[in-house]
Amino acid sequence: MERLSKNKDYLSIVVPAYRAEKSIVDSLSQIRLAADGINYKYEIICVVDGKVDKTFEVASKYAKKHSKTIHVYGYKNNLGKGHAVRYGMSKCRGNIVGFIDAGLDINPSGLQMLLMHFKWYQADAIIGSKRHPASYVEYPWQRKIMSYGYQYIVKVLFGLNIKDTQVGMKFFRKSLVDDTLDRLLVKAFAFDVELLAVANSLGYTRIFEAPVELKMDFGASTIATKGFVKTSLKMFWDTLAVYYRLKILHYYSSTNKANWIHSGYKE
Image (tube, rainbow, N blue to C red):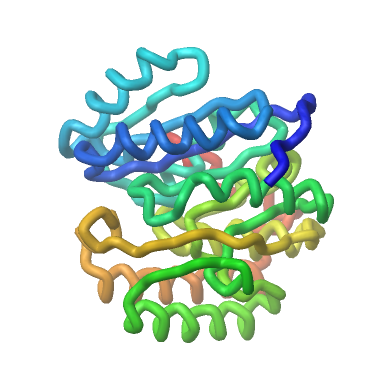
């Protein structure tokens, strides 16, 4: 595959992490190596979602060796992946902003392909997809059934022409992030759907999918530590709440700006 030509784009990669003290160095290292190979100026912003173990200390020690490109932030309480990503995005300086989940369920080498799709499609957003025909995925059949069911619900509720909203590798134009960030409320795993649905409602309709390599490892997954069923049910209710705010309350509308909860992505 050809390396992306040198350009003036600045890539900001947010890496949300929770209870990842054993894997965070490997995650940051692999993401850094992937970013080194694409000829983009870049920054990696690791956000430790709750200082409940040694993840912050381990990540900070590694970041000191790569201080020009890796920055680590953290806060005391575990507030959810969505909160961590929004917090990280609020620190970003790039004109292309996105996130890659820690844990390496997703192969970071797919970053190059993702960004090539971003350029090809002149996209507002490019998202990794398990259901892209070129994707290579290994994950339990229970998760497959739940994933198909959830994506059907998302399509019915929001009309998004997307086959998979939940892969933890997504990148956006900075203008999209700037327009949506203050409107968002979801702090957990339905954050992806809220961001995409709100962006689509604001006219950012050039949302495309790209292939990924995904091998689901429950041992490394932060979802597994909280309980997959409990997390899935919470995500379902959060998704219904997004629909209610978007379609019934019109909460995300610019005319409702005075009522947005601007502190939603702070510590």
